[in-house]
Length: 236
Image (cartoon, rainbow, N blue to C red):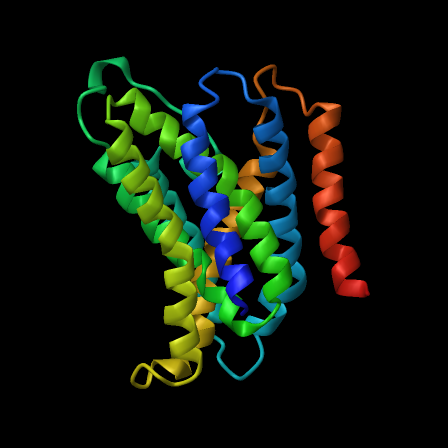
């Protein structure tokens, strides 16, 4: 992976989170469209690239780890309140407490998202993850604001979140090159975990209802564009 791609992963999350100081309104229609597009794109990349690659070899347990990853993301969301989907949940009775569960689950999520990049399809995945992190990081910044965190603390924790995906890539790259013990033989199973997480995130974005319980035209177009670009990259 080039340094430019690593910078894209970092700055998409960092700028998305710090943008909360500029846009403090409650209605972010453009971010919702970006989220729908990135969810569809991630779904397309997962189905067309990651799943076939994970099943290369003779390991019949990959499917089990995909299921584990799917369930693991459900557990993470019990602590993150669905910020991975760009959701912002504000609890008026708990504004003073720092949301440790949200921060920890988001960092684990972002770290795991960086792992498949080491196995190829870098351009597609970097693009999809970067888009996905813009609304997710914005939601994180909004939640930190709602919990009365100072500006410096918000910048620090957004910075920490932005570093997680590049860190996941570095770890995965060492793993795939055999640089971390003998874990390389389990690489496809680890990718299975990530695939399960991607499937949960992307399908939740695609199938959840909007505020009026209608799948509106703009979101439909964004979803079709995301899947279309993923499919075009696969076929061409």
